[in-house]
Amino acid sequence: DSLWVDSFAIAEKLREIDPQAFEMLVNTNVRFVDLTDKWDMWAYHPTIELNHNGEIERVYFNERTRDSWRHAGQATSKGRAMPQAVTAPFYEALRKFEALVDNEEWYINTPLKPGDIALFDNARVMHSRTAFIGNRYMEGTYISWESIEATWRALKWQKDGTRYNFCGNIAGLVE
Image 1 (cartoon, rainbow, N blue to C red):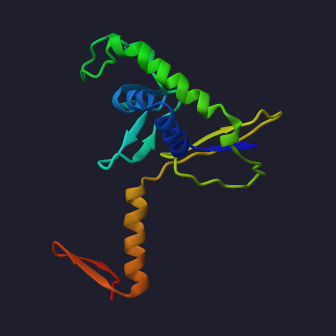
Image 2 (cartoon, rainbow, N blue to C red):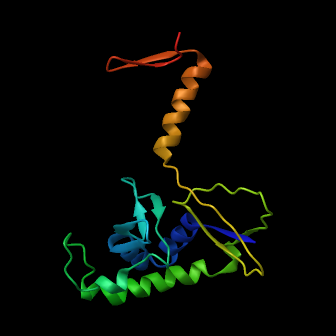
């Protein structure tokens, strides 16, 4: 079965019960690494990302790619190392967030059958699975919200039969 969790709700709960831990996860950049034979992807960002209004915009919580321990107190080419003085408070804040994540009251359990598809907002919804016996094949893909919105606008022009002129380029129905 697939497990789903609303990470924004959990982050808001942390903000409510421990504002200092919440602020630590908002203000501490962490390195995330995804290294395979096909790519070498690195990113630095906080665990909880806020927008300009202080609203949660994204939660980065992936224990397989979080690489915070390796660069603690070290200088990096981008100058984004986690200072040694921050390491212990960061991990204490992360433990508090993880304790909330581990509470099964937050979980939504969805059994998936062969051929099922699950679409979700990876910036908000954390996902996992229960134990299983046998083989399991899953295929993943990522789509940016910007791409979705751009396609939506183009389809809306086509549906409405309108044309849109931007910088001399005409979008919409072709006559």
